[in-house]
Amino acid sequence: MSNSDYLWKVASMMVMPQQEGKTDVVVLADYIVSSEIVGAATYASRQQFTYTDGAFTPYDQLTEAQVIGWIQSALGEDGVAGIYANIDGQINAIQNPPPTPVSEPLPWS
Image 1 (cartoon, rainbow, N blue to C red):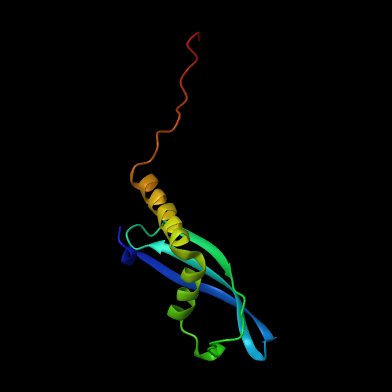
Image 2: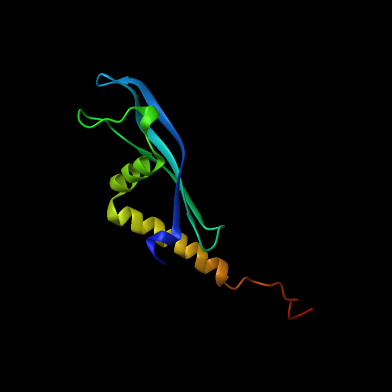
């Protein structure tokens, strides 16, 4: 699958009312990544952020794309690839369910 086959959504965010002279600084974001191919395949997690003096966007001006960018940056390429691998594994299990044990009568009955 390509990266465009995954849908990233920010489910919620938590802020510090005051930090480093700024107001409503995002410190935590809950996010969900799902597959565009099989909707039942999802990955949900939480990313923590630490603001240090520098670029700052006021809370009411943030976009979901910007926060997703922060999450992906914090995860790094390997972290994002791991999420995609997790979802791909779910899709594979949905499309190719593993064999399940079945009950057989006892051979001596």
